[in-house]
Every structure is written in C-alpha cells, then in structure tokens.
Image (cartoon, rainbow, N blue to C red):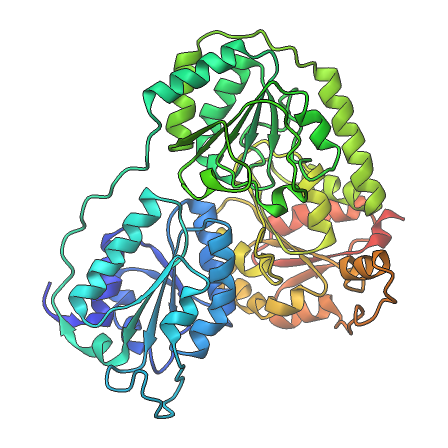
Amino acid sequence: MIDKPLGAQLSHMLKDRGVEVIFGIPGVHNVELYRGIEEAGIKHVLARHEQGAGFMADGYARATGKVGVAYLITGPGLCNAMTPMGQGYSDSVSMLVLSSCLERKDRSIGRGRLHEMKDQEGAAATVCDWSVTAPDAPAAYRLVDKALSELKSSRPRPKHIQVPIDVLGERAPAAPAAAAIAQLPIARPDDVERVAQMMRDAKRPMFLFGGGAVAASAEARKVVEQAQAAVFTTFAGRGVVAGSYPLNYGAYLPRPDSASELAKADLLLCVGTELAEVDLWRDDLGHRCPMVRVDIDTHCLADDFPADLPILGDAKVFLSELSGALGTHSTSEWREADVKAAKARFYSEVDAERPGIAQIAQAMQDALPEDTMYYSDMTQFAYVAKEVVEMERAGHWHHPYAFGTLGYALPAAIGGKVGRGDGPVVAIAGDYGFHYTMQELGAAVELGLNMPIVLWDNAKLKEIEDAMVRSQIAPNAVVAYNPDFCKLAEAFGAYAEAPKSLEDFKSALQNALKADKPTLVYATPEMLG
C-alpha cells in the first residue's frame, strides 16, 4: 500500500487484523484517524458522548468475543471514556482505545493548548491495563499488535494507545503483516491428572464457575455431568452450566447461607473466577475442603482465597483434558432435592428483600427468546434478576460488575446489538441511571435497532434509600425529578410503551423485537397490580 497519513494507515491495519466496527466521536484533534475508516471498509458508530462510545465498544466485545475499538479525541474525549475503560478493566473486556494527544512539541510544556492535560497517558493508565504514547508510525504499529496479541493470549483488559496529532498526520508506509499470537497458558498434564484423581476420590465435588469460563461452557457441562458435581456460578458465570441442570445452585453465591452449601463439598474447583467482593459479599467462601483454582491470571491464584492446588491455565483446555482424564465417574452423593430446596430458600430471601421484582424479571424472561442477550445497569431490577433468572446459555447477561458504574446498559446494549445483528438484545436500566447515557437513544434510533429498553422506574434511588434506612440515616438526596420517559423516547424518534400489567409487559417486549427501531418499555411496580 502506498504511503498515507498514519491516521488512515491505522484504520487499514485494524481492518487487516479483523476489526469490523469502530465506536467513537470525531474531533479536530483526531480527524486523521477518520481519514481511512470508510476506505478501509470499517463501520463507524457515532456515539453521543465518549462514555457511550466506550460502553458500546465494551458491549460489542462481550457480545462477539472480538475486540471493541474506540476512537477518541485528546483531553476531555479520553476523560469521558475513562469510566467505561475502568469498567472494562474490572470485567476483563477486550477493548482497544486509540486517542490523539498533543503534538510532540507541546507535550508536558503547559502552553494552554486546546484539550491539554497534565498527564493524559498517566490518567488513562489508572483505569486500563496499560496506556502508552506512540512517538512514530513504527511504534504505533508495534503497540497495536502488542495490544491485540495480549488481548488474545492473556487476561483481556482495555489497552490505550495515544498518538500525537502531528504524528497522525505524517505520511507513513502501511503496517507490516500481523505477527503470530501466542496461545493462552495451558495446565500441566500432571496437574490435570492430579485433579482427576481428586475428583475420583470425592463424594461431593463442587464447581464454581466465573466469567473466565464462559468460553468453556461445553467442556464445563460435560465434566460436571460426568462427575455429577454440584455447581455454583458467579453472576458473570451464569449459563456456563445450564440453569436447568439439577445440581446447579445458580448465582446465589452472595446469599450468606450459600456458605453452608459450600461447606457440604469435599472438593471445590473454582474455574475462571477471581472471587471478587461483588461475587461473594463476604470474606469467607464457606468451604472446608481442598480447593483447586484454575485461572489465566497469576494474580487471582495468589489472592485472599489461596488454593490447595493453583493451576495456571486456560479453562477450556483444562476442562476438556480433565474430562478425558476423569472418564466415567458417577459416585456423587449430591441430592437434587437438597439443591432445589436451597434454591427455593434463596429465592424467597431475594424476593423478601426487594418484593415483587422477581416476578417481573421472570415475566421478562418468559416473554423473550432463549438466546436473548441482556445488558443491565446498576438498578434493583437487575440486582434481583441476576440472582433469580436462570440462564441456559453462557455470556448472555452482561452487567457492570466490580467497577459498578451507572449508565452502562443502553450504550453497551447498542454495541451488543451492532455485534449480534439479528440476535435479540435487551437493555435494562433504572430511572436514575438512565439519565447518565439516555442521549444514546439517538444512536439507537439512527441505527434502526429493534431493541427493547426496559426502564425500571421506582421514582427514586431506591437502593441508596434502603442503605440509608439500614444505616439509620434519614433518607435524603434520593429523589430526583424525572421527565416523562415515554415522551422523551418518542422525541428521540423511538417507540414507547407503558404496560399496566405483566401480560402487557410481555407483549410490549415481544412487539419491540419486531419493531424497526428501539422501544422504551416503561416498567413500574404498579404492573403487579
């Protein structure tokens, strides 16, 4: 390819590496990045705010397993996307953020240039895996390939590459051919055989699957059934083993009494989970037996939950090899009736804590196809649904877990829908959190996405009010003025429905999937009658 400005060459390079979609907003400082997008044949999705662009890249990556790419401007553009970068870091999302930065002659001098920051590279580094400045074209190419390689060969976390404005405009040769990408670490055969023997000796083996096992769902299901093992999942691991599997306790791990169920196991295998605070909400997991941990991140294998046998390795390969080593094994003493009784008890606790929401969440699932992909926000509706709605497929419910930002659902669902095409996608937001990114309704309408947006309106920051009450604080600053959300959606050009009953709610969701643009489904506690 003939020499072109580096900004254009980067788009061609990304296309050559398999990138099909870029989310972003053009500005005077990154226009050179936009020079080659159409020429390279890449689809660009225009967000209404850089936070939206970042969340769209996140949602696209989670839906497709590909890298979510965002193009951003210097200074405020990057700052606006740092929230989604932080969310992607905590949730292990494959994101690549490319931004401009001040010209080489202006960096770190403090001349009051447009969009100037004291340390843009350092600021981004606080919320992603690494943030590096490319001083020239060869460095930019090496960094892009480094990022793409690491996202495939290690724990995926956002990377940030910034290129000075003047460097983006300089002519450069095309990027070199892509280098080979290393494979994920593989467990040692001796460790696999050791675990197989431990399982053969166990009477009550239990698996705990996290988000790191999502790509290993088929292998997980096979080995679990071979061993007739019981299962817990984290929220991110829902669906790794089908919710309908009789010995699956589901995602009730944060229930305090789940510790007593874990204590019944005589062997615990934790696969692809860092056992984070938001997975457990307690310091003691509850097990009293030997624990095996399998992960690709050495940090997770040396944290507050030390394993008797820590194994560095890819979950998919490990579980496949474990299945082969285990052979036929069905000496389990777990009883389906006991698991069912425990789940019923946990469900009752959830329903008592936040009455009525479980019924609405179940109605939502009943109305939608099994392959629906959900994107939820920090809202009580999602907190309940993440526990009580059982998933039959892995990687089909996405939530801003550890970082816990508001405003995630709508833009992430847009990215997910762009990635899934005809596959059904639903966004779930609360009335207050919706304010953070509701402007992305414009992008959803512009793209003509037939996507239901469930807006749960309990007319306040109910979770915060409840926390204040528990802390014996008189509730304050928990009620905000809301617009007429249905009229707001219609003003953006979307459809809107305000169901009055659960049957109306189901119909609204089903109609939204057949529409030619997004539908805001306004849901309230009054639907219960």
